[in-house]
Length: 128
Image (tube, rainbow, N blue to C red; front, top):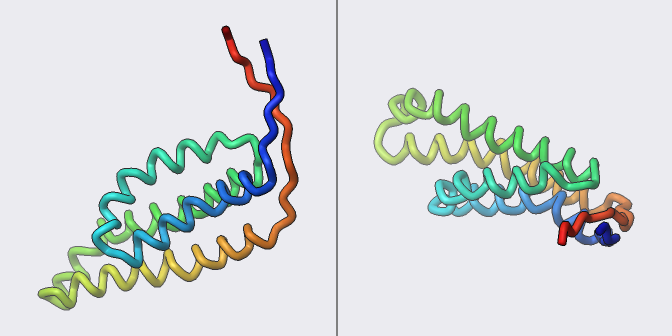
């Protein structure tokens, strides 16, 4: 049996902003970063299958930013750390991640918040 379910505009907007919000917070609060890297995979995958294509697009680009910056730090983090040495190297790697993730993430949150979202009605199969 199929039932109709309404996905409100606010739910779509929040889903579009969620990955960015969490990435910005985790990047700014460094101890949360490793936890967010693990949790983000599930958040990204759940939003990737959202029925609203605009929500999926916001999620995709926020994933590109966060995973691209984090992956680049895996490759270039050790040479940057060696260049500065000690805790200065860790701060340099973290600062690069902040410079990439935070401004673009905040811009994406703002942009999604000011976009015109509409309610959606979808059919859900209950299989009972």
